[in-house]
Length: 194
Image (cartoon, rainbow, N blue to C red; front, side, top):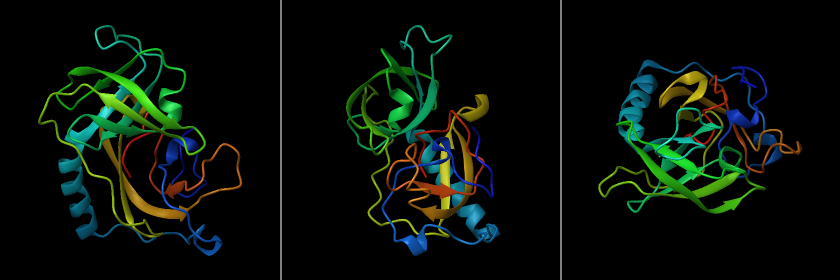
């Protein structure tokens, strides 16, 4: 269920975000990224990647064949991380892998299945980088960065523009506030930062 650059988003294509009016739900074909925007996104990727995690459904000491793979982002110095609920749904054990490829135990401490969000506690060492939550609302046409693990990759960037807010809000498999972007996001990228 990979996303298309010009088509409707799938659940794997999305991050949760703010609600928008009907007029903002769809945008025309977005302008290509400029050289300046591409350079800024590359800088952001270098800063954000150390705070992004590979989430696997397995024990940290036995993860040769995980039951599922997704992404998360650390949002606090004490190891709180956000991911998509469908990444961790039904998991008996969770492992979080950092940029240095070390694995740490992770546990779900809260979730909202209606909005497809889960809050994790990851036992990362003190000083592990994190990204604070955004204070502003996203807008159609904004540049976007997703960092994920799709297609066997390890914490790789996907860049593009937000093409819709509250994308396909009437669909039962899309949570309220779904953002759509024109980047080729695939399973394994879910839960990464946009």
